[in-house]
Amino acid sequence: MALLELDNVSVSYGRIEALHGISLTVNEGEVVALIGANGAGKTTTMRAISGIRTLSQGRISFNGEDISRLRADLRVVRGLCQSPEGRQIFPGMTVLENLDMGAYTRRDSAGVAADLDRVLTLFPRLAERRKQAGGTLSGGEQQMLAVGRALMSRPKLLLLDEPSMGLAPMVIRQIFDIITEINQQQGITILLVEQNAQQALSRAHRGYVLETGRIVKEGSGQDLLTDPAVKEAYLGVS
Amino acid sequence: MHFDELIGHLGQHTVDGLSKGAIYALIALGYTLVYGVLRLINFAHSEVFMVGTFAVLGLWTAFGVKNNPPIGQAVLFLVLGLIAAAIASGGTALAIERIAYRPLRRKNAPPLIFLITAIGISLVLVEVFGLLLPDVAGGALPTLFGRARQIVGMPTIIQQETLLQIGNTAITNIQLIVFVSAVVMMALLDWFINRTRYGRGVRAVAQNPETAALMGVNQERVIMLIFMLGGIMAGAAALLWSMRFGFTQNSIGFVLGLKAFTAAVLGGIGNLRGALVGGLFLGIVEVYGATLFASNWEDVIAFVVLIVVLMFRPTGLLGESLGRARA
Image 1: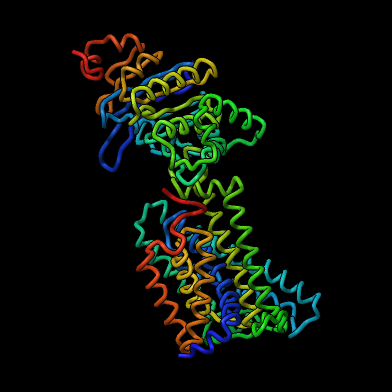
Image 2 (image 1 turned 90 degrees about the vertical axis):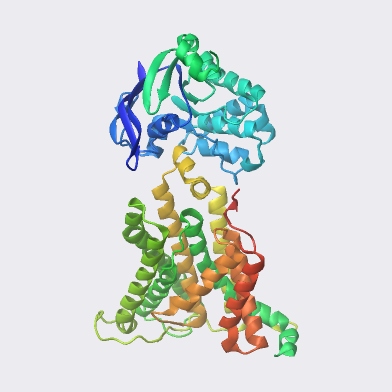
């Protein structure tokens, strides 16, 4: 069943249209990767889904409900949470306070405590640094914090925008291992935006290729990995 | 220059300065809260304070409060005055945000438009209260035309008397009440911002509004909250002012608001504890300056000190932040 469905979605910045009627679906339990070059509209797509950007056309439905006009904070309540591009940690808050921000909309303190334990087990580095200010963490640690913070909302759908950005290859592998684990162990559906197409497609069930605001290709992760055009454009192989 | 007088009675001047600065600090919080979240200098905040003094005046007039009531009544009138001022000032601040700023935010107006709007609202409130003033004082129905603006006295609720004498330093009952209540109000606010869930939402919006929304924080609600909190603090300041100085006027907010804004900038605007430090610092500097030169020099000295401090510490004494550091 489709958990998230984008139907002919367009987004404009002033007079410039950044997304030209894209459609995609994410089914429950899947990891879906959205790949594309810089400026293809990946982040705009994420922002439209999480409600930071308003649509100029089209419709987004989540869990069977039309959320096209819903405020961003209420989409979190519905079970949609994003780890934004550039991590966007609250620099003046400690690691624990940042994680608590992820649970901002929740009232079940017992469930929040259990999820906090789970996140700290998933990311032992965060447990070590729980009292440290978020702004003082390394890039990899901030990425873990951003993912952990999003998990604290107990999302049905986790949106990850460029989780590998600016990280060393070792750390990237580690982050992707955890993403796979979140999907398989906790059963959380994931939509992933990446420039690192190799890692993203090899972990994803399905993928979409975005080019200048249009979806030009879709298929299973494996099919896209072996597609000659994708290989040439995004995997640095010819 | 009266160095001997300043040094000889340093303790006394410090006490006087602290109790003066405590009122500045309470008002300064309103500027700092709004700036911390919206990067907006709400110049109408001085009138939020002014409205609070009128709420106190109106309440005491309605109850027919006379000078020097018995202590039980005095406490009751102060508490009721605080509630009335907090509601009036908090409500005014909230109304200003809803009527003036929110529509501008919806239209993504540039910062300059907000500033002009703030000044406009400030003038409107000053003038409207100038027209209403004599009748509020007389307890009659308001007449909207042809009234002068004058200072209105309020009854003395607590007779000023020395409570503590340490060497040649005397601390009066009123100074103590003003200082302690201001610090208690600020401690409550500090706790609320740094220790509660709503406070964390405020800090999140201050540090990164977009990500705060992604975490499910309703930004509009946070904005309403900070205007209300700033208004309540200004209401508390209005009660303390009324108790200590016993008068008000439609234009009372102007200089006081400017001083409080100065205090906020001195301490580091956007920084709650900075408002306290800046307010107390400004109060002390004013009293010292007035002693050294003459009392009519205090405003000159206050603003010269502001300029000098900002030359050396452009972000204020404690730096700019809401709750904690902004990276």
